[in-house]
Length: 142
Image 1 (cartoon, rainbow, N blue to C red):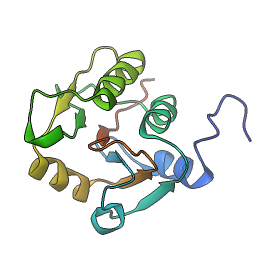
Image 2: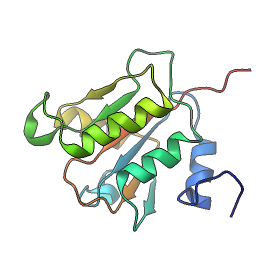
Image 3: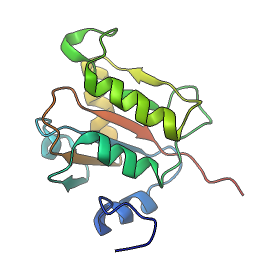
């Protein structure tokens, strides 16, 4: 255990977050997502939902503010405008940590392609469908 570090951030996940560089992306996906199939690197957070994992990661990782879009979410049932409760919670969580950045919906094919290219996929035990989000890592300013 470490002071001030969310215990959801396992040694493997902390190592991954520290190893990532500016513009690398990390996907946080629900329990139904084909994580092993799509991941270049897979980190499991069994027993945790997507929102606590998202909150833990955002507590230590900066999100890219060099680009207009750096946070992306899956969409339910192919509807770009739909916001399921899990997406509302994602938006609220991101607003706490990165208030200047919007959470951008991505069509399924675009989302899957982005996950496949991500530095790491973090598989949660989130039971809600479409509970998937991608973060693009930013920098720590001097």
